[in-house]
Image (cartoon, helix red, strand yellow):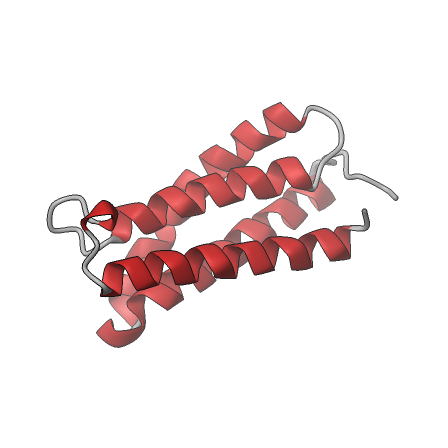
Length: 124
């Protein structure tokens, strides 16, 4: 599968997951809350898992290792983007902005790593 198709498929999956979590949070579904976090821990978990999935999806050799790398990068980016949005975005758009900033940073990090330190990408 070509990388452009993979990116589009990943973005569709990320939008579906983000909408599902946001709808659960707005419906006050207690599965998405951990105390008084307003659902951000559920969002953070999904960003970590989706970044791991993205790194594993975009590589062909050692997908498990790259998936772990994606998990670590997703963890770091999830925390950094949370602090970025808390200082800059109005309250009404926090959930959507958190996903958007996080996913864009995960993708940018992947392509930066691939450019500066080659990650075996699938060529098909």
